[in-house]
Image 1 (cartoon, rainbow, N blue to C red):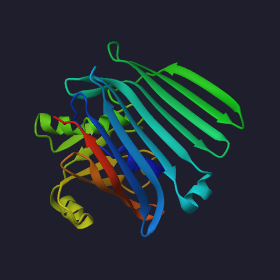
Image 2 (image 1 turned 180 degrees about the vertical axis):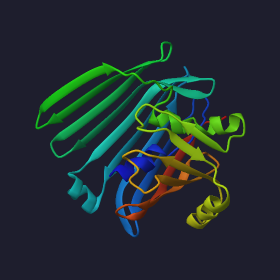
Image 3 (image 1 turned 120 degrees about the vertical axis):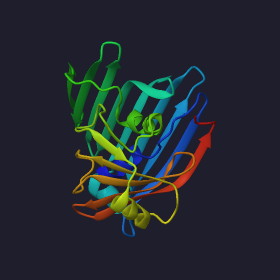
Image 4 (image 1 turned 90 degrees about the vertical axis):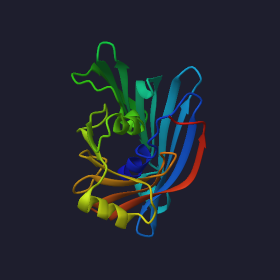
Length: 248
């Protein structure tokens, strides 16, 4: 299931203007089997506020085995100088009779983040809230939405970024040499190729390498998580896309 979330979180790499909205739906699987689906959306209001979300769920046998596991990751905040600046990031996971909630609430002026965690099982819940020692200006969703702008700032080929909700820094690069040849073998269409290397539980592969093929709207049309420990290559494929407005 974490692999379904991975594709959903990385679904759209957009730098958008006010009045922009996008929606993308993906199916995720391995070989000829479908594991689940991910839906990603971004809305930017005329007042410069935004809301972006990723919803994921399993399908078929994976749904039965996971107890109908569902996840929603949501970020809300403001657009500042073309970048998404989060005020809050919340993630909710439900399966069987269990629910897990995690929220990050940002005070960018003082570089402080408050974390709230809640766990529930059979109606009984535990709650914890604390100020974190670490600070990053992005959450996991805004980090990927802002990638396009940060690559274009100084013609970057490789970026190492931190985000609240990620266990380790996220490395994103435009592949060269052997890595570029592998990307071309992986995808049968042209576009912008990116490789994401992240060491966290959601990416259960030997190197945590996620290959992405990005189209002209900066939406990932296909993603492949390479060499996972149990399944080999896991793929995500765009099923539906809607884009309204202009990105910068």
